[in-house]
Image 1 (spheres, rainbow, N blue to C red):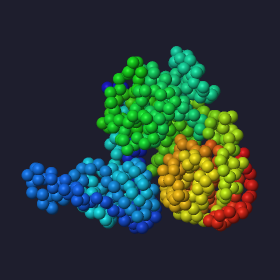
Image 2: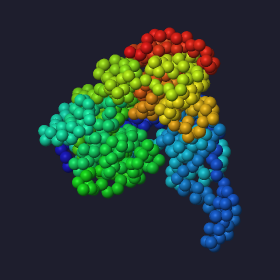
Image 3: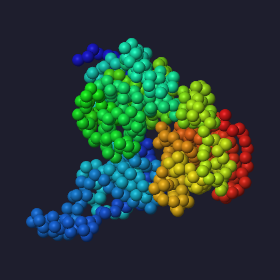
Image 4: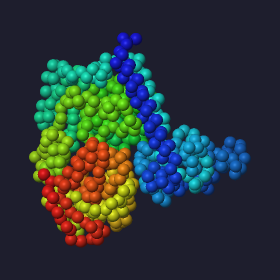
Length: 634
């Protein structure tokens, strides 16, 4: 039994209260939403009405198969027995497909939902599910074992609502283990704010390893210090600075020494991106992901395992394993220990998630950027530290290395982020600095907006929309995407970023209609997603649909919308062209909360930094533009 550590015991109890408060806040918000009329929930994007379940009665072919099976078993194949047999098999199916004429929800793959007959509070008549695939009017959902709604035999009259299951037991298990073992390494890093120390022999070894890898000065510093750190190290990776490339070389270098390396993040997407990058950069062979197959999207050629296989070293080489901190406390990877834990996108990891991951290892590398998206915190907590990510918590005392050369953004696109978020320590590499948009053919319309000489453009529609979708913006964005495609820009180099999924759906519908003559698989390559989902991604052309044109007194939504971290992510995805479509009325918002007003002012500064084009009649084509060149980007 380890010696008692009062500070660690206090931290564990604090994290337990934090975890409970987060769950309770989520439940209150869910139930508050459930209490709204269905029409209001649909407008809010938290529900889908008029849902039907196809295949709730057996087809003739299925009837024939069941009839034969019953006959072979010596059972009279009555209609009742055929239906009971069908429903029994349906209840055991792991998935259910639903259809709806209109889907304006905020659901996406991974969303927790509940299917019911009209009353989400009625647990006996409700089915908790997880969205596996969202194809608009058709969704595929994962069902709990033995609780598939197809077994009810009811096709119509269903409603799908947002849901939040109680998964606290997983991380409570981690806290119990932390309390039982009380490791000094975690106390030193998270509580005592110990500064990183470095092993002299590993410093020398790291310098030799780094020499042939083509690092710039800061990348080299980050690699060497992280490799040689005795306990932990931080690497801040602003947009396009190659943090995942450094991660790939670090993980491979550790594994080649026979060490077990865990790659973790707050979500599967971040883990998959990191593992795919390792495969692309170093081709390290002993590389795998542990998790559901449904969460393996984006892994490329990296193998996915539902449960962790044996991880013994092969010819002296260790394994690199990607998994969430949750997997470490379930049958998937429970009890497996690692030598090094690398937390990617650590600026989105809460202290609780970080502690759970750290418990599985001995040395910790935190890679992230606290100027980009923070963790999602639902409740209010008295201790400000609980609102911060583990990266920001550690950065205050030991900032580590900031990568400062972007290989993504050109000079015009990088200027605002450099001055407002990175203390002017964010510079384009010479290969990116002067890049401009290449248009194989001249645009027949919107030439002023698509002009390669103007990398950053604000198209001001001057609307006053206050909803989570805006039709004229959706129309205009679809027109711009269509013109980019017609001008020869590859579809996979175009992305549309919107603050709300409802707006993303509206844009997708409009684009599909506008470009009906193009193959669907081509249009599918045009990414349309939220800011959160675009972190870590880049394209030649990014179109931002601001959607909102005014805010009244809705402080919660305004805090979400104007958050500087979200703005930073949104404006740093583009390599050569950034088009912002929205309304200048947005920046006339006034709030009594000083911090929120500062955020609005930052937003206004950004829009003022763009080349300004006003379109008062946005749906008319080839209308002469009124250009007010407030100033081209720095």
